[in-house]
Length: 171
Image (tube, rainbow, N blue to C red; front, side, top):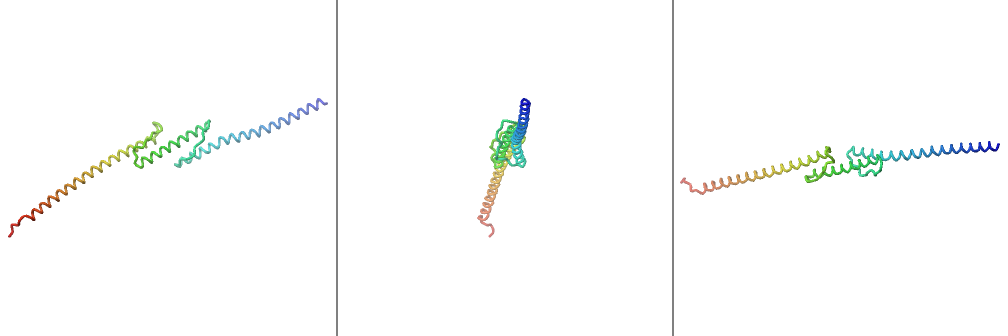
């Protein structure tokens, strides 16, 4: 009977051990699942917030922290996109203020926005040169016309003075 009691005691111990181990595994699994989900959901929500902000035309000031996983790669790509948009914005401001020497390098050969901005800068610079040349030509024309008028007026004045100063034949 002592062997039997020992055996029941061992089974009872094993049963409690398995129950506690099961509870511990379930609780541990919940903690692991919670922290894993949190480590995925939080960065994805940050990415979403930043992308929605950019969709409204607002460049976020904050950046995504570097991570060694897929979310980190997406964050790095988003950080690069924000930096390139800041560069593009600065280039557009410089070009808009008349600085046609502002430099800008499109992100790639297929960067449609960057290529369009460079073309716009070049076209605006050419247009400004054309308009400046037109102003010079028109100014020269106005000066020439003024001189012609002054010469005619001078000649007319001289003729009038001669006519008045000539002795009159009428007596």
